[in-house]
Image 1 (tube, rainbow, N blue to C red):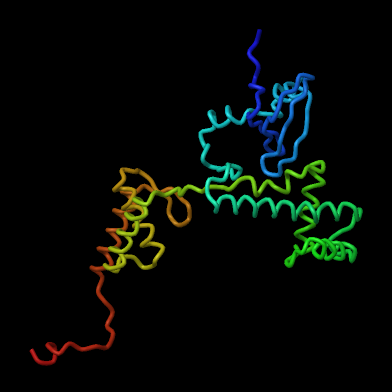
Image 2 (image 1 turned 90 degrees about the vertical axis):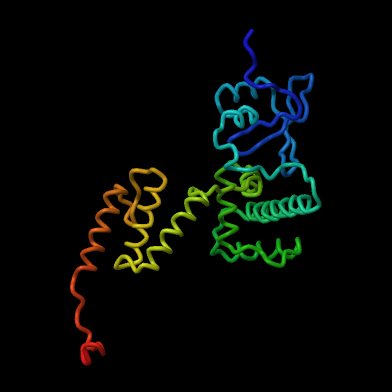
Length: 260
């Protein structure tokens, strides 16, 4: 007997194409209860259908995805249990945000196929704002984007909560040590007055940093790959030629020339 693709047990998180569901129960009649982690909405699905969706790749096991995903910390879930009063307040705020969007979208769906420039569209937004006590109702175009997203998903409310379920955690591509090295070289070059422009000084600072880190190449201001040592040698040669060239007469006279 083959091992089932996932463990159908309460508490397991399943990832659908339109959001995450947590298994709440597995009944004896062959149905599985699924709960939306954010809104708490619960639905049921037959166990054979759920396994068919898993085998087809439509539903994936959240635990296995975290074990296989090398960029696990790229997105951090916001649906964790609140451990502090601040976290609980943030969860309630997100629930209120999602409920607000759902209220506007449901009212607009009842109005029929109207656009954001229609008078009935704005009237519907004002009516919902009065009923819910929303002092800052969304603009017609914002509400229309919610409505279009909701319709294109097959009237799935999860699309209105997707931005509240996850927060993107950005990792800097350049480490603080590299940034400090670039800043040090840039400060030294500017103090010496090297280079005709700020772009050329920045490119030279990048080349010096690549040399310090043992890198062969770097990208200049145009995005072109340059050889670090060759770029540094050429910059030094141009600097020597600039210093050796005679300076133009600017009209100033040295006092020693008048009185030797």
